[in-house]
Image (tube, rainbow, N blue to C red):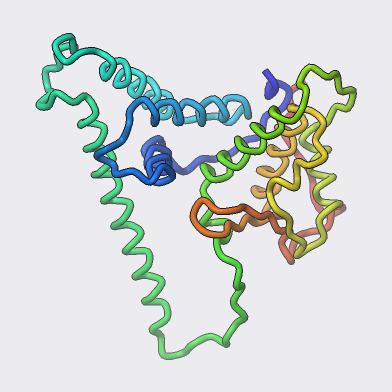
Length: 257
């Protein structure tokens, strides 16, 4: 497996229900009309990508994968051959999952509403801070989900595999630390580039993977911020204006020999 030689620790604060809601939103379908076969396939693609990148997943991601595969197998059976479910009230095996998603979305929407109210309340003090210039570019790092980044990486990897002969032997061997140093030397503070442009010079699939892992590390190191032009739009990376110089950064990446 391509990811066995390097491992980057990445904390994922979203859970499996967040990923399912993300996939549903991306497909622009109603929660109650989800296709178990389609969403299971997409979910497993994400799990496989996390596995390829050696990103540790919480156990609930694997439990949800097993549950989705079970539901998919049930939907393929004729109704009269469905296995008995003691607590089942409907014939459609999707409904329990749909209920979970609807309830979870209610809590997420409520949390988002309260967060917005908190932000609005902060602007109601009598003493206002000095006016500051507003960055016109949308979607700062906090608004770009890890799932957006994984989707962008999947698209890059797919295009690379379609346009390259993966049977070619490439002598160059890059490590995550190598790519971190290269990106820090390439980007001046404030400089930005499209996400897919960072992979233009990659000569092999492992190099594409290492480049992406280096990007994740640089985000954790607060050296780069991510911007996205609209929902599911184009992703850009920008070196922070206050980013430290290369000689001031201690690059410590967990790479297995």
